[in-house]
Length: 318
Image (cartoon, rainbow, N blue to C red; front, side, top):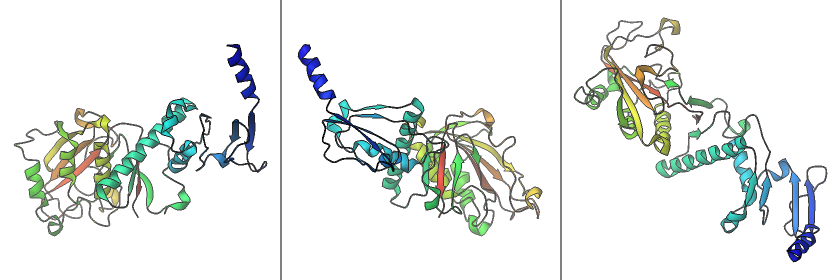
């Protein structure tokens, strides 16, 4: 024991404290002169720096609206050293630890999208509200926004009603949503998320119309939910009505519909399970006369409700 204490006392003296900031002009040393080095700093050691043989970190860097790419760069301080993983220690507040977990989960989902679609990523799932994907100055403000949030409902504000654009879409949806499979109106049916995606695999929004609904991005968002274990590929389907009389809203100058479902758009209708994604389908007969009306043929209107949770989907439409 005495020998151990003597060795500890000898090694403690071989410690150097280096303050890294714009005043000192110091930086990470590739070959430290002492056996132990304590680096103290903020921005200069928080982004893209790898510290050789780093074992212990006290992390207190916080921000009101953290940026996902910046926080990921903070995690690079350890480099790629799996062999030392058992000895590595990080001390930080619980809410910051959860932030790293959320961002790691988001990053994994983005990588899965890349592998699945082999196309530029338009939609980044953020597992906690208040996190930004990246700096605003590198994005186009006209095409980038947080659009889809947990616990909210979305629908195409001007659904396709032109028979030339619809083609046989209504008939195909009639077959998918037949009374033989779903006999009861306003009753929640448990289905897979893959089945929801099959129904969503149509164009519902009139090209060029306004609103948050984007057919491709809605499918990407629902696909991202499918890939998360917490949802277990489980969704809910509700056939709201097969012969509705929904018209365009006078409050919107008869340019789009005001609502599809009764009640608040953030509520959970028809006793659905709020923990799973829900698709609510309404078939309108299309016979309402102008200016509120359509083109005289029936068509389906979808409403997607994302499950409750503190998350959002960051959308880049460019």
